[in-house]
Amino acid sequence: MATIEGIRIKNFRSLKDVTLGRLWNQQQTDPLTPMTAVIGKNGVGKSTLLDAFGFLADALKSGVEEACDSRGRGGFERIRAQGQKGPIEFEVYYKEDGNARPITYEISINVDHSGRPYVLKERLRQRRKGQKHGWPFSFLLLNSGKGIVWKGDQEGRQIDEEHDVFDLFGLIQSIESGEAEEESTETEVVELDDQRKLGIATLGSLKQHPRISAFRKFIEGWYLSYFTPDAARSLPLAGPQKHLNSHGDNLGNVVQFMEREHPKQFQAILKRIAEKIPGINKIDTEKTNDGRLLLRFNDKGFQDTFYSQQMSDGTLKVFAYLLLLEDPTPPPFLCIEEPENGLYHKLLESLAKEFREHATGRKGGSQVFITTHQPYLVDALEPAEVWILEKGPDGYSLIHRASDDPTVKNMVAEGLPLGGLWYSDYLDAR
Ligand SMILES: Nc1ncnc2c1ncn2[C@@H]1O[C@H](COP(=O)(O)OP(=O)(O)OP(=O)(O)O)[C@@H](O)[C@H]1O
Ligand SMILES: [Mg+2]
Image (tube, rainbow, N blue to C red; front, side, top):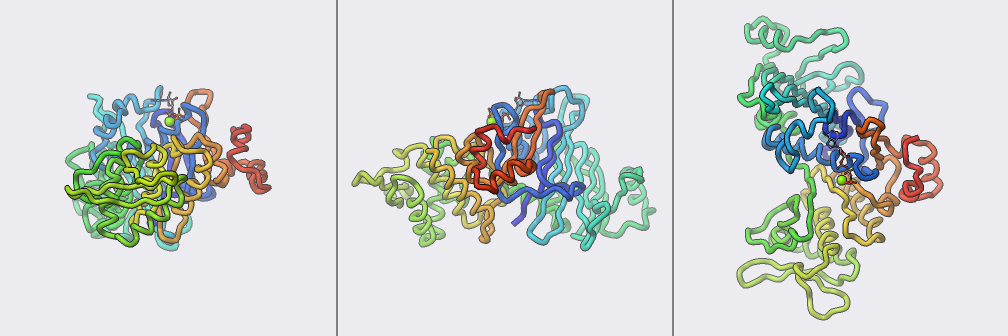
């Protein structure tokens, strides 16, 4: 399972410069855990942090200009940290599976003189097999849409940024003129025809670039939940669909898919889920005459079944989350904003445990990233899993990890629940 070990975000709204987890040049920091929760007061930047992932996914899908405008982001100048003139930057440190060498992806986005956003720089790099120290080898270098890419899964160029004044355009010229003898045949000069599109979107569709393809697929697989119970009540018209979409309005289609493709497994899943939802005896499905599939919930107190249209918001939400976690081919990265909304507080601890089980499971679940306001949910978490966002005196966000504070770590080791410590202000930066 591919995982994000760390991320650095610069100039994205209130996130002027925040880092979570490990980066290629910060190896002494622990990587992100399989499950991560971000907490903090109103307006500290939790939604912004989740939207940074959403922005990256949107930029890959439809280019940076559209990503700046979509989902009510309001354009580049609204997104760039106020008072900053530099580009918006992201650095993602990720690895494909347990033993893979991590890869660093960097992208910076700026606006041209007419105010249109474009990709200023993009870069991918990775250390060589057995290389523990020193500069990683770049295998994609793009400046304003033009640059160099190294094919295969080994090649690249080591750039000593402290001593080298690296001249990308000089290297491009020498490769184009055939003078760059030291470069292998795997080196290729590329130019994108649209500077608003990501290089990894174009090059990641080519077989010659397995590392870029893998990274592109990884981001394409991210699931960012904007789940609303009302949407999940809609009756599916189209046919079966494999995965729940971000709004949850294809819940019925996913149910159809599961029933058709994995009938036995699905019955077992429904049984498991019914045991976890308070007040529910049994969940099953009913086919209508026109071929649609209705979800039926058997409420403990009543003889007749209820359909999903009649079920409570919280019940539907828990059902959707649990179904998401039971997905036979789960997304590699799952982001959920405030999953607690509308759920009974005693349910939260078990929901947090479900998320963690999914994230750490041997079945190969998803890396889970959530924001929350709920101490009950945080009670079920470890200090290394919890990040606290705060607003600095200049208005920009600051972040630290609960496990960075030895007092907090000790108190949790002694059996005090983390949510309780948060409630008593022990998690604030000191
Ligand atoms: N371009 C920008 N530059 C700097 N700060 C910004 C920019 N755009 C928005 N902000 C600030 O970012 C902050 C973060 O808002 P965000 O919605 O992420 O908070 P939150 O932690 O999700 O809060 P809540 O708990 O209320 O949902 C807000 O205080 C807002 O003033
Ligand atoms: Mg928010």
